[in-house]
Amino acid sequence: ETGVTQSPTHLIKTRGQQVTLRCSSQSGHNTVSWYQQALGQGPQFIFQYYREEENGRGNFPPRFSGLQFPNYSSELNVNALELDDSALYLCASSLGPGQGRNEAFFGQGTRLTVV
Amino acid sequence: AQSVSQHNHHVILSEAASLELGCNYSYGGTVNLFWYVQYPGQHLQLLLKYFSGDPLVKGIKGFEAEFIKSKFSFNLRKPSVQWSDTAEYFCAVNVGSQGAQKLVFGQGTRLTINP
Image (cartoon, rainbow over all chains, first blue to last red; front, side, top):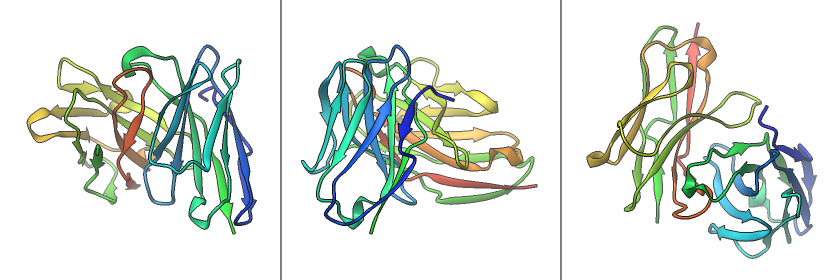
């Protein structure tokens, strides 16, 4: 176990709806990154939060947004869901900044299905 | 844009066979390189990492990888695989020049070990 927990583990949404995914980071970690893993693909970086501020964003549209709370837990929000948003969403926590040398620990993910 | 390419999508081996999984990256700056493993139903786990120094790095469970800068490669090897090595393997490069890791992953290689 990594100490990174994500909820829910699975959910099904209808196209056009909105969804919120949650992540509790490992104790002591102040950085949370979110990744999208489509079926048969590697994870793709969505964005990262460091001390409650966005610290980098991948090639995802603005309807993907996030938050980080004072306890360093995080939310990923997706508006106007599309069928292609169906994927496993992974959260990774780490201790930043660390010049990229501090290991990121991944949660088990939330499987989102959009119908 | 930075990218990571894994040459083999699905590799099938018998127990005790030797393993080499290819990984090439496209990134002009200083690289931090990683191999992650995802066992069925489990979270992504770090196998090994390269930051600097000896280009031959050893990881957990008998895995090793060699960084060849001139070939932009970071191939994963194991001299003798076991049935328990059946999993999905991902090569990744960190593109976060500051702060915590922002990982670009390859598409993954599914490894099946037949007993």
